[in-house]
Image (cartoon, rainbow, N blue to C red; front, side, top):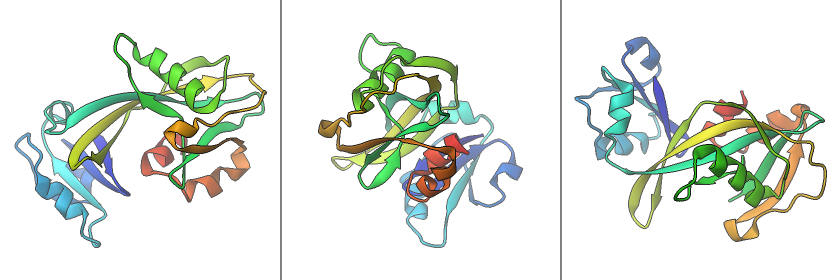
Length: 192
C-alpha cells in the first residue's frame, strides 16, 4: 500500500481492496489520470483508492515529474522534536536532493540549513512520504525520504528565512497534539 497526499486528502494505492474501505475506489490499469485529482476537489470525497496489482510499479509510472527530497524527525536529549513553521503550518525540516548527493547527505544538509541544528546523527530510516503539489501550473510528485535523527545540540536555532521558515522550535511530547492540529497529513503520519 502507498499513500500520496494531495492538499489535505489522500490517494491510497493498494492491491488489497480492504486497504481502500474508506475510499472512493477507482480501478486502474497502471495509469493515473487528472480525473483522480478532480475527484479529490469534491467536498464529499476525503480519499480516493486506486486498486492495482503492483502499487510500487504504479508509483514508478506516475505521470508527474518526481522530485526527490529528504528530511529528519530530529530528537534532542530532552526527547523533544525539532519543528519548523512555514506557510502558517508546522512542518519538519526537509528539502530537495542536490546532484551528486546521497539521500542521507540530503537529509542532514537540509535539517542544518533550515534550522541551524548541528551534530546530527541518523538513527534509522523511517517511511517515505509522497505528496502532489502544483508549481507554475504543473503538478509534481514529491517523494520524501525521512530519517529519525538525534542531536545533543542546545545552542540557538536559526530559521532559514530565505525558504519562508519563520520559526524553529523544539516541541515537547506533551505539546505535539497542539502542533498536529496545524500540520500536513504526511507529518501526522510520521509523528503518530
